[in-house]
Image (cartoon, rainbow, N blue to C red):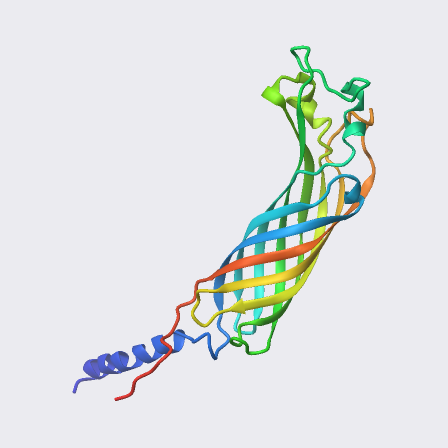
Length: 254
């Protein structure tokens, strides 16, 4: 047999073994993989945020990489939304009647709806402490994150006929503020052997150090130069789609 033929036969025998090693089983092995996650959080306000908003939700996406040491490195973007805004009377006092109504451009009372809107961008590091149920990739996790958070008030008027709350004028009332934020989270992550049911559920705390991002605030009749300590507390549920290649659960020998 020539040398070239011997090399070919060695490659034919060697490559399937390498492919089998790459297909690592979730049931008994800690695997490394990219993870794609849909994330939902139910959040309660704390500290300075209590004076501005109530209960809100957070919906976003996460791209992660899980190592074979059960570390997870993630980038997350979340959209914050809610329908409870505090201090409406003080916010609109300079453009309201004595009865607290706002008159639109047609000379009639306009219907107003105030909402919370915001976003949170962060990089996160997580460690999974496995209890081998249902496999070594599942267990209690602890996460810390660093990023940027901003929130504002969205004012919607009936038929959009209130010029004092439209365009650049609306920016004087939206109380937009943002700043550096950090988060901690702890909970349980499940990575199923079948790859069908993969999720995490945990308690999350976010602290954001924010300042006003507007040059002038109409309800104060001056700039807002204060610094704020905004807290979010709540539960976070992540639905996880792993990108690893699953090996067969049974082996046959002949």
